[in-house]
Length: 307
Image 1: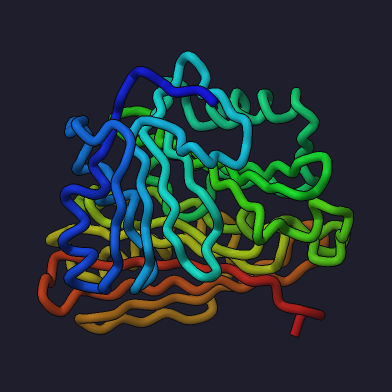
Image 2 (image 1 turned 60 degrees about the horizontal axis):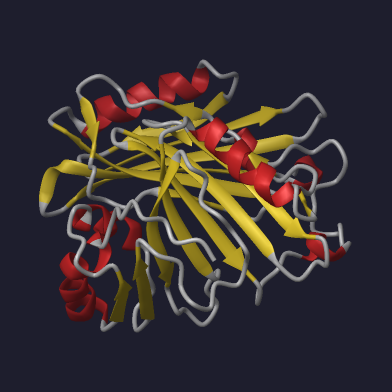
């Protein structure tokens, strides 16, 4: 067990525990370097998306005593801490790291350590830079040789450096880790995450740094999504038009679009190089209590049998 002496954060709990307890009745237990307050504001972002009534456990700037995987933080990276969200169907332990490398280099460096210790990377479980990308985002899946453990490594570039998450799973190991490839895409069908159009932040629009965004979808399966919170004085329709133009320029065929003062949408289809039909849906919604704040989501899915 490695304990990184460059203490980087506690921020998740001290500032977030009160809102969490008040809003969704979650409880938070804090341990580790609890006197480190340098990055308390960042933890707010990291805790976004926790389920109601969760028993959340945070270890600050240290690995927990029951760390399920042998992992050493590389010298050019700093351990922020770990989060166990305690959800009934949660995705295991999250290890948060701040890296001085770019996202691709960060993922490759961490993956190399696992690959040198009898782990392997399943085919087609590597995520590129699609979806809302105000910052570069790279992900990679790794399986233990015995098929008993899975690690999802995700790195996203931010102003302070590259925020990196290792998601360690034991209770919910993907079937492909122990030889069942039935959950993968048919041969020739690209991973859904890699089909997400790349959407950069338009001029006159900023990303809310305190809001949780991200992506989701089955690894190697037929759907994926990306979301983000935006702040702008531009009309909702103008923001939507900017994103619609970006998707159109990436080869997608616009099928329908429309907007009101509170919501804008657009749908597209595209046939990839293997003849697989995909559809995409963009949705942008204005917050009722703040007309200058918007929640944006784009999702793509494979259309079975081109229906």
